[in-house]
Each structure stands twice: as structure tokens, then as C-alpha cells.
Length: 130
Image (cartoon, rainbow, N blue to C red):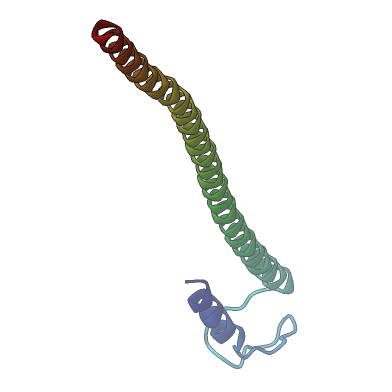
């Protein structure tokens, strides 16, 4: 859009003009403007170009800020999820460690109960046979 406006501006800038003194006849039919009006038109044109540049710069900066905000949000989300999963894994590992200790004591109680029972049975049978 901006390039199209610039092309039309460049084409419009290639008009022919001549200076005419007051009282002389114009060598063409059309509209005559004063130097002040021409200056005003050129200043307005420059102002519009600067305004277009500023609008373009504003839109680019606005889009860059939006992209930076989206990046920051995604980065925060990534970091928080990473921390959450790390804490979940640490909690799971701690629970597995507790279960491992409990399993050890359960096995110890089971095996020792078996051996104590077997020993008691052997002792009773031996004493009865004697």
C-alpha cells in the first residue's frame, strides 16, 4: 500500500511548470497557484509522508511488542511447567524411596516370622520326640 502511494507521488512530482510574472498571460490552460500555495502543498505532502512513516513505525513497534509479549508468556509458561514436572518427579522419587524402605521392613518381618515359626516348630517337634 505504501509503495503504491509512493509510486503515484513520484509520478505526480514530474509535472511541468513555468514561472509567470504578474500581468503576463499563461502559456497553457489550467490552474495557476502561487508560490505560497505551492509551498503549502509541498509542506502538506511532506507532513503526510512523515505521518505515514510514523504510522508504519508505530505499527511495526506495536507488532514487535505483541510478539515479545507472546514470547514472554510462552517462556513463563514453559518455565512454570518445567518446574511443576520437576517437583512432581521429585515427589514421586521421594515416595518410591519411602515405599522401598517399607518394602524392606515388610520382607524382613515376613522372612523372620517364617524362620522363627519354622525354628519353633522344629524345636517343639524335636523336644516331643526326645
